[in-house]
Amino acid sequence: MNTGDSRAFGLRVAELRKQRGMKQEELAAALGRTASWLSQVERGVQPVNRLDVLRLLADGLGVPLQTLRPDTPVAASVSAESTDTPNDLDQARLTISGYPVPDVLLAGDAAEVAIDLEALQDAVDEVWRLTHGNRFAELSSAIGPLIPRLERAARTAPDTVRSTLWLLLSRTYQALSAAFVRQDEPDAAWLAADRSINAAERSGEVLHVFAGVFRLAQAFVRLKRLDQGEHTAATAVNALRQHVSGATATPEALSVLGSLHLALALVHARSGNRTDARKEIENARQVASQIGSDRNDFNLEFGPTNVGIQAVSIAVELGDAGEAIEVGERINAEQLSTERRARLAMDLGRAYAQRRQSGEALGYLLEAEGLAPELIHTHVAARNAIRELILVAGRSASPELRALAERADAQP
Image 1 (spheres, rainbow, N blue to C red):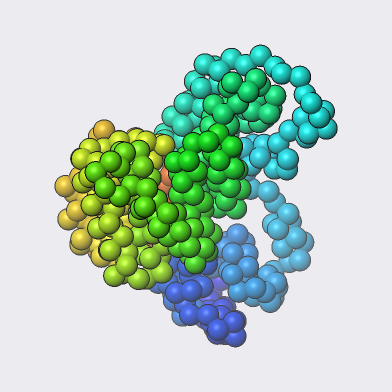
Image 2 (spheres, rainbow, N blue to C red):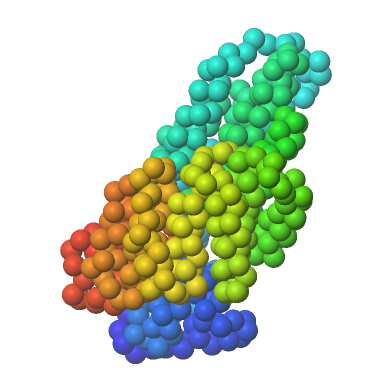
């Protein structure tokens, strides 16, 4: 695409965007790109040649590909739209599609089956280890046989162990919901979270219900359903506060409450509501101080350190890069999971990218990739930061940065 074509294309994008009544920031957010990138596209500075990026723009503008780029061959458009891009969690998504055990439903009074409870508990613990390690391909393979096995066992096992099996099933769905959120599969995360809540309720473990609600709120945030995310988390917080008031509050209940405050902080940050985002971070910090140490109740990893990590993330979301760096550089997250440590490094990389400190940004992004490659390669915000670094550097972009952009499919 030559300069004249780029300008004409950019004017077409801007015109279609305005016809839809969208601001640059709104369209950029829907595309998972930065407003700076979209601005350069509309000014003709940034050419768009890749078919997948053209399709992304067309989808965001709600128009056929040929409306956006009339010279696009129809065959290429159809072929691209029918391509099924593989995902590490594709098998897991397939596993949870539809009713889990229709044969048990049709069997009526199914015969009780022998259950190796210890083996199932070990399998669920392994699912969470894979989730915390961002090892999604292995997680997907493990989920395939495990979920149907648990679903069947919870319905056919002796009454004495059914509540335990429902709880194991809830924990499994919670892990899967967390993984789907991280791989930007929020619709599947919503389904998994909802099933985790149902299973937790049938187990009689009330706090696990609230842990599932936390996963549900995360799915809503990733879906950009911020009103639903706020309603979900706030309703749970209001109910839980009555349960944890006073000196008798258990650390487990406080862990869930604090995590829900963090979910609300993220909702407000994504909404641009700086005041309420900071208020919820402070609420979470107060809850963490009541606990006094880092814990991993319900695999939430809630505690003072994780509140600090979330404070960094919220500061980055709000564009307060200096604050994010000041807080983040003081955090020692060595005792937390690989996922949490990678998240801190990723957010510090994003913060330095906001300040155009490319060397520091690249260093932290590479650190995050070394800890959890899937996080950097699939996280929208991380890929946006990498693209922005490439755009800023231009032809002077280092080989390391270009290689990272290639691995993360984050070329401008």
